[in-house]
Image 1 (cartoon, helix red, strand yellow):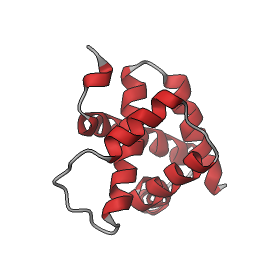
Image 2 (tube, rainbow, N blue to C red):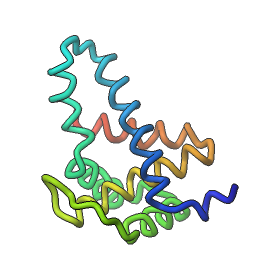
Image 3 (cartoon, helix red, strand yellow):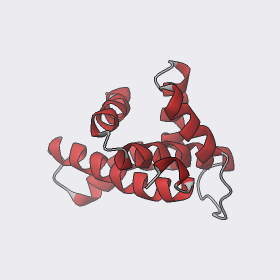
Image 4 (tube, rainbow, N blue to C red):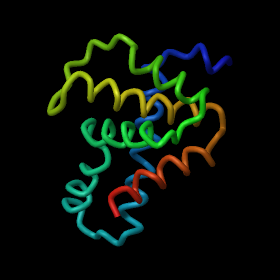
Length: 126
């Protein structure tokens, strides 16, 4: 399969699951023992608003490689029929772009790079 030809929204679909699992593991490992508290804390990471924020911060500090920027731009510009709730269309597109990049890296078996991105994200709040 040529990963470069996979639909950006499909990459985002996969990336969303990978991202969510990483955040859930991170929060459980922080010894948060109540499901409600886990849910509340996860919003700091998984909401489209926060994902857009993280993407912007990483772009500002030239965190991404050229190939990754290409994936981000393609996904950010993908047509979506979703109506975002609780965020702007621009924030939603940026969140989709971050998720698509993670999906792309997952399909590329670049777990090490996903780890680098996710470590940046969780340390951003610490």
